[in-house]
Length: 369
Image 1 (cartoon, rainbow, N blue to C red):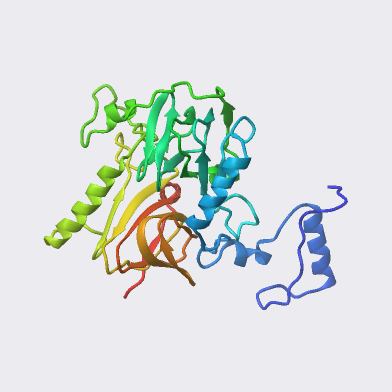
Image 2: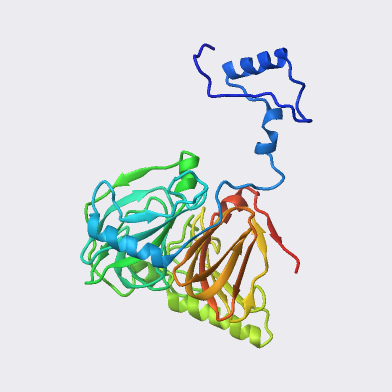
């Protein structure tokens, strides 16, 4: 092979587990470089560590800092073709400035002014919206308008046509979550433009998907086949709130209903399978009663958490923060997480766990107290 410069660079090392340096070894390494070859013995410590060593770092974004910047972008940046969305992504400080919260997860604050439309498009990336405050925007998924309100979780499977419209006189911000970094890394992404404005400007209280699928434990006999992602487009806050309250009430009655003392939690699921809402994303809601501290847990895969309500303290690896409503933080792979709250705390959480479970690479470790 003839090339003027090789991207492969191999340096001899004096480390005890490396071969003795010699002119012959240097010549061998130059030959490897010329043929684009890399010997395992120089790379094994990096490629096969004793445990995951994510390039992503634990990090906290303050909602009080994000929201004013999103509002200013609403004043300065139009929504339309090209940018498509007024979405501002969280960039993990360990990932070289890429717009990725973790190596597999995207999280962004999206902002829509009164009367604005975010144009229709579709992409293979699985997505959702979570609303920490406000209402007035309808997301229109395959022509079905879905109201967005505080506490609502709104999933949207990959390759579904979708746009947004703000039908009110007030701006609205919310959090977008997608598997963009994962699909980018494995070269699986497709994208397609749709109409410049949403194709249904109705503003119903309940979407068609909710009328068909939003009845606990009941399934339409016209839709008995499993689907890879949930067909239900809105998981309403009132149902999530009631489920968490009921778990804590049952715990007080002596019934096993919580993850740990004072720690209620639910997972959003696909009603056609009982599994995760989307093949690449797991979404959950956790409630800590006053005076609760969670177990310290390490998991393979990464997580993004948004504080929905309350105040508390969070420890991720060697980093600790106080958190309050709207704040977002990242838990990289295998970094231990502990959460505490004296007054009570509600957390929305999403992760890439389904990917690792599908590949039989998931692992979880709970520290002993």
